[in-house]
Image (cartoon, rainbow, N blue to C red; front, side, top):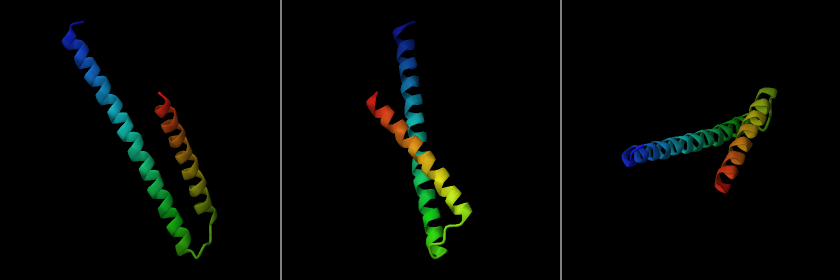
Length: 77
């Protein structure tokens, strides 16, 4: 492999890593925003938490924890 080929592979790897990081960040921010939307829905229901809202909160919180764990692992690398 020539030096130019090696540089292209390195650039492609960096680009892919950047794409993945941006995607993770965007999805995480979307989940946080979605959670705020669900919390607003609770406020609009005068604090009443329906089964549907409870399920959405639990699912969203679980997904948020997964992303936070992934970020924690990536920081250690």
